[in-house]
Image 1 (cartoon, rainbow, N blue to C red):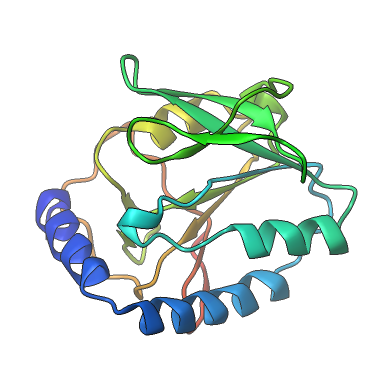
Image 2: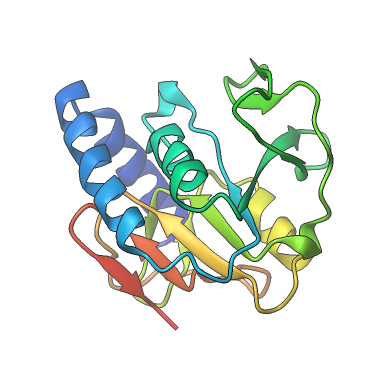
Length: 190
């Protein structure tokens, strides 16, 4: 299937999940995330969930990182919807957040961090194929972000759904995931 069809299908599937199903899937994803080897990571970029889109709720995982890996600095983004680019900021327990016009939680004030400092990026997605090609919301924010990261950055995706066989319309600027966490398994794709 192509990205547009996959995006439509998996947005619908995610929107149809009940709150109980989301809660259960989040708990399973949390287990997958906490079993991953986070050693050697200094800067971990993590998205903050858009509740209305039923994205995996990342705050419990971020709190787990703070408790179990205090050496890791969590970084979150602010979205620029004119350039479709992200700016990146440190995120601590006391960092104030506000929702932007699209319902995305963003830091009000914090230290800006350059993309090349990221060791790993935890990326939202709707679905991924078995080669790591992700289908997101179609604005290209994360592909632009990955282009400015160091080549060895770990590209980690989170999806409620298992990988599909193939995304048929991958472009030269699409950046595949290295690892994808799903409720049932963690897929190492490279």
